[in-house]
Image (cartoon, rainbow, N blue to C red; front, side, top):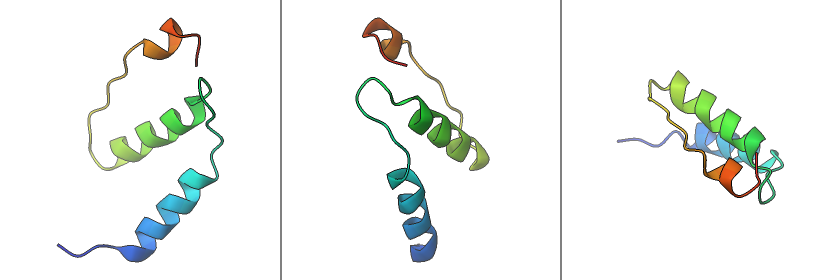
Length: 55
């Protein structure tokens, strides 16, 4: 399997630019959900964030 290095670098840059401090990871979660869904993945989320006072 070949690794798309340019795509990997671009995805890293996108994720590194998303602010996601503890209990404020909503933007990262939305990005990852969209990314995985575009790749055909099924995404589920639990309610752990709400239980600890996060997003």
